[in-house]
Image 1: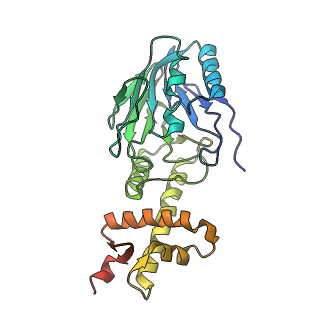
Image 2: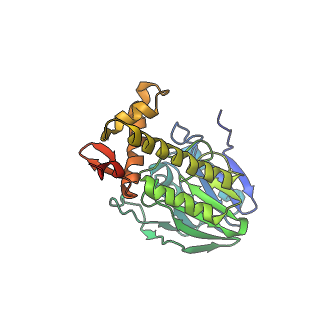
Image 3: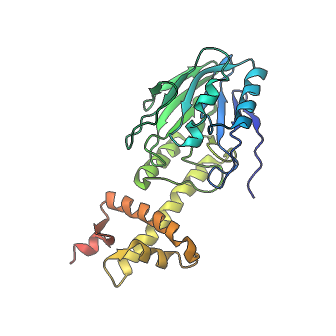
Length: 286
């Protein structure tokens, strides 16, 4: 059973988590947004979904109770449950319009925004009273995904790269694995995820994510090595590897296997011919 997450939580002296109030199978308890800093002018990470009056009401109340307004807004990535509520959030800021920052996409045009989006850069530092955050570009979940490092707490805001419960989805596994290793190198003592509860054992959790993907990759390579057929379709791999999984879930498993095959292709370990795959070492023997 998923942990209960309050709508508002003071999770540290400089961080208030405001839940997006948008629970679903994909968002878990909802999208976590974070108000960062200790002064009147603070930084907000992510803004939830559009038209969610419950979330906006909670955020407005938090700002009022803390005599605070928004100086900066940082968007972790382009998915609507992280950027969709931008227009609504801008209406609750008590002072001048905050600056809005986001890493550019490289796979599609940005959707029109209500204000100009200032481009984030890798390793960029941003300061508000009581907090310094360092931006790290962590593609894989999406091409524009970023995490924020908070040196004052040895903390990482992981967005959708690492979740508080379960495992994350991704667009590009090769990039995603690199991003996981980059977060591991930061050696965080705590992770504040985009969905789910605070992660108090971050190193163990990151290694679990990496090991889980490596194990699945090893299974794929093993099947490609031992199969009587040199070339296999992704669904043939699914039927061998996911024998205990109901067939109704095999199409979803096929998507996952294809992500792994694309990574193996980038690693130079497999060869693709039309819709079939062969281990590079076996192809070279043909």
